[in-house]
Image (cartoon, protein in one colour):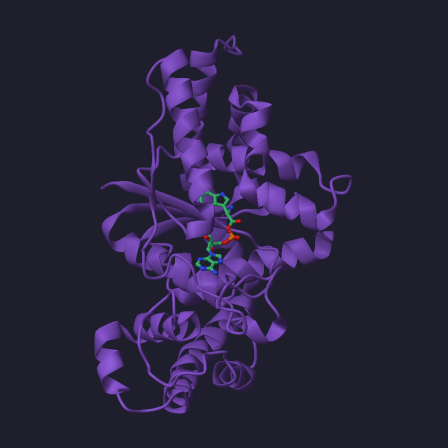
Length: 332
Ligand code: TYM
């Protein structure tokens, strides 16, 4: 079975609809066909300041949401990044193979550091993508299921894998991004020119999966569309409507063409009312399942302990090989 690896930050508390449709939904599907490794990236989380108690709680909360979304610890390896020390160890080697200018060109860093101010932004934030490279290479992943915003980090991963292999001999699998075109980028409901995100979206444009379903329904009903009334998928001319159609289509597994047909001659109101219902039907059980997992932290922690053990077996082997290739003297 080919291998996939991906990660999600725990910082946000509730996952948003972009996280789910852009990434987590694919993770659930891929555990059937692939040897799948999924992790909550707490090391990445501390690249910006975190309250320790919140970080711990959010790491469990992220795990509970991943299980509620359908990850099955019998079918995939689910773990927390800091439980596997090899991530930080390989990241150091990768740091030493990355050019300063190369790291400076990472657009997510540029955006995030611009938002924080360059004096506030940590060196950890600067090397964030390189830790992500280590995450992926440690598992010899063939594919990395993510949203469009992670593409540049996967490109860097490919570059560094090839660089290491070229310099020290074949060691790492060169991974490919696994990005589904339809859901690669879910947009803000109030401003369909920007992606849905915790940091950039307005509260009304952001669907948090754990919010009160009634509030979510309201956000869908007040989503920005356009002055025309035709329900048609056209990302250039009708970005708002197209975003709603994408969401509707993926949540109900109905083709966009079929939806266009269903709503021919009907107004935006009908589409939004129905989508609001679809969304409520999705988030209500998701919230309940998340709460059930949270109510049982012992089970949660034992799932993560097993996951860490499985992850370390793979990561440890890769790291040992990389250490050897680099020329570190074995500790006897
Ligand atoms: P994070 O936590 O920001 O986001 C998790 C996943 O959600 C996707 N995503 C979206 N997809 C579509 N539309 C959106 N509006 C949207 N917003 C977020 C992201 O693309 C991502 O797949 N750096 C990563 C975490 C990471 C990682 C890794 C991923 C760390 N190590 C190794 C893959 C492999 C991140 O911050 O994701």
